[in-house]
Image 1 (cartoon, rainbow, N blue to C red):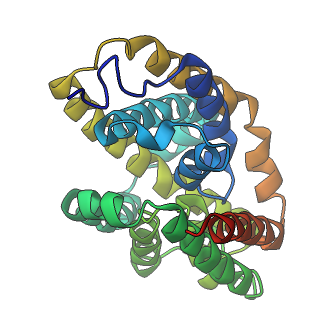
Image 2: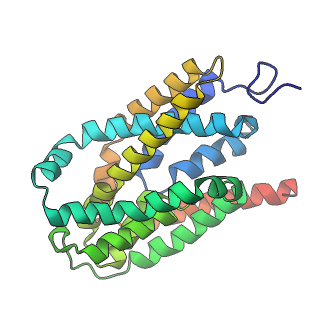
Image 3: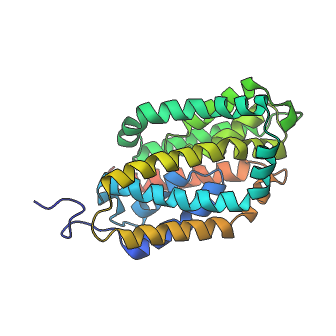
Length: 275
């Protein structure tokens, strides 16, 4: 019997790899869940992406994150440089505390989360739940700045990033909501979200890249992987203005409504197909 990654089984096509890479950049920059979109869009379009070997899909998504991470380091290079130059013991502790919860949860529960919470139904639930929290956080008074961030705030942001390991929740959306619930201004909430995100994105990419190197790529996967990573890199660079759109004192409500609409589309599709 052929395996899912054998020539007789479903293969990751070059066109699908390019399309998913192009989608990944803007989906990562906005609070709408990039992991949710990478699963739901092929499912809604009836691609055979979900039939690919699970390890192949995870490896491909590592390539997409690597492309996005590289583009973010270029786009935010001045901000990253300022953070490194101004590094203090407090800031280092802040980053460490915000990094610890997602690192611990991801290391210990990554496989169960992927197996049980990566279906269209659970992603729709994550989109809905995240929308409610985002809408509620948007109504909080805004009075605090980044300079006032405490280690307790770091733990809140870390817990939000741990929750975002559930597909559909959105790392960006969870950290923005957490910061706004802690009464940070919208602009400062965005800065905090970015500052705690880069170590997590970089750490996850490095860890999964090491695993990928150990396993190796299946035959014929190198070109789609490279195409997807390149498209993700390019789409992230081309969509960096989205960071400013979210940051310009914008409400999270439009993104919450979009997430509800996408989740509703998934539920309607499941209802029509009988699950």
